[in-house]
Image 1 (spheres, rainbow, N blue to C red):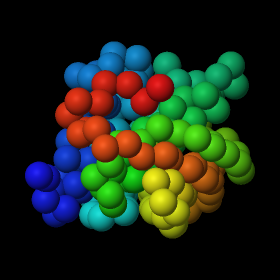
Image 2 (cartoon, rainbow, N blue to C red):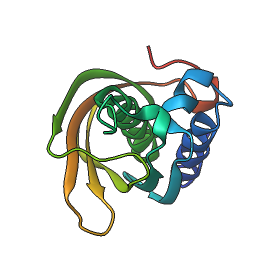
Image 3 (cartoon, one colour):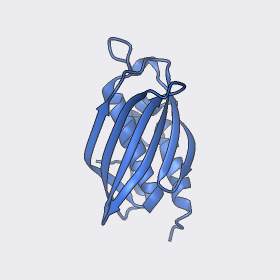
Length: 155
């Protein structure tokens, strides 16, 4: 049986593999270049330099790409706390200010609570330097007992 202390390490490895396209190529499009700075039980901190291919017509980070990143960080954060793989059951993102291509942002995913098999994760994205909030997300994740290594799709 997996040790609880391994959950953050496995969570980090999974998120790194997703960003490199080792698990699913599609996620690498939105997560490529994600730098995971810190992982502990129920908390993940990352940096991300927004690439040109994730911009809208105005040169802003595309809202859909933000949502993909938030979903993956939320799932990984929930796993780091419980060791249980999850699927999104409720997903809410509020967008506050645009971030431009080649701008660096800081991402923090934090478990806010548990209820039975549900975990609520809050993900905050802010511009590096100014701290201006780009997006704030709340995501409820329903867990299963599958191991992270066996998990190839969130849906």
